[in-house]
Image (spheres, rainbow, N blue to C red):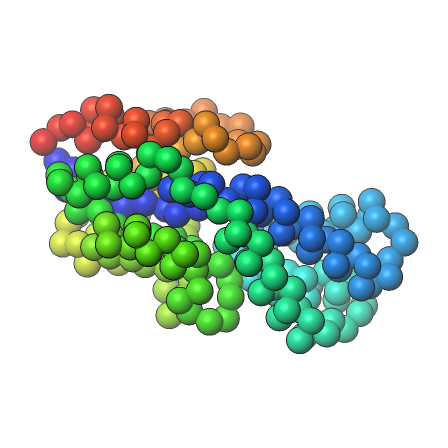
Length: 235
């Protein structure tokens, strides 16, 4: 019997896709211009590979990623400038993050039947408490537990630790919890490896390229479809 529903944040409850696209474009322009490079295509090829490698290691620090790009070109970055760019990066993401319309209603309804919690990865910034969930204080009251993995010595998803920490704090077994997230590797595979029941959300409003996998878990395209899942209707 399911007793808890746990959520990811970005692209699960809010749409930040446009914010990330804008922030990435701005960052690429800043790096390419500041390093005074001439071959943009080669720069972009390496930049995308570095970003992919960092994501694969669940390292979301833009500052560290950009430093790696500088070192590839045998250049020393201006650390103060990287700090400024990172602040501007996340300000852009926040400015273009919007709640999915159904999010508040779904959270309110779920709270009448289940314990509701949040497990999201850090944004990679050095100061805790900067995650953009803080931009939506109206949501925080719905969650009994909020865990920002990657902060305070908690390893980031897909490590099983933050998932297990959350269910332990809720007082439920992993098999009694559903985890809803948009990232196949980090959210779906990570929560399943921790013993939870994953639900993959590929929200209809999000413009992105989804992984080419054949899912063996429930797939939804809006949060309010959770109520229709047999998994949550078995009481």
